[in-house]
Image 1 (cartoon, rainbow, N blue to C red):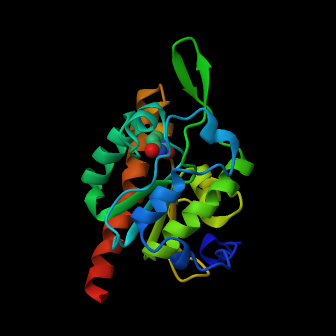
Image 2: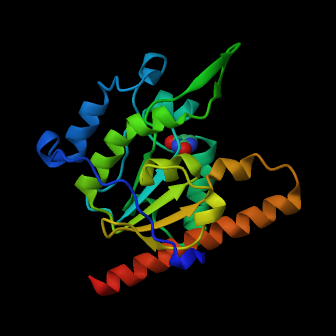
Amino acid sequence: MEKSEFVLRAKPPPAADPLAEAPSLSALAEQEAGCTRCPLYKNATQVVPGEGPPRARVLLIGEQPGDQEDVSGRPFVGPSGKLLDIALERAGVDRDRCFVTNAVKHFKFEPRGKRRLHKKPDAGEIDACRWWLDRERALLRPGLIVALGATAIRGALGRSEAVSRLRGDIIELDDGAQFLATVHPSSLLRLKDESDKREAWRGFLADLRKISRWIEKDARAN
Ligand code: URA
């Protein structure tokens, strides 16, 4: 099947009216602070809610907070975040006009001596945290949802899809929002070979430029 013919059937958002439960993103963040929906809250320092303007048209979804995000309480402030900031700037996307969040809102790690090593969240943890992501979506009603990596794809769609299958095409979701998947910036940080790094960087920028083109089109239409 052509990718463009592929119709995404994301699980519908929760039936309960999220706006009644948390009337604003700041109220939602306060509720998130008390989250015990999965065991990750037990070892994390704090929840890391999404941040950005409540009227942001673009929702950027990462995987989960890392070590620095766990300490600061803010998403994408560590090495992946710094790379993301550079890439967004090069692609002409103003991060401050996007709402930036994670599929999983507590840091999952394995202690190794004094270090805390990142551990990938599992499907159960992603699905439990979807409760919050869905509510962020309901409050924001973004026009474009960008998933950075496979965990974000599962959080956004409610099912697993390979990044390579969806990457780079803007597709429409059942709720009318547009959806773009790309790689997680940490995948670039892990590359060792210089030419692999250059190629991955070019591909990442090409995907992010689709966001800036979408924003321009959206601004003209609204
Ligand atoms: N990686 C993510 O996916 N999110 C963050 O907030 C930081 C690193």
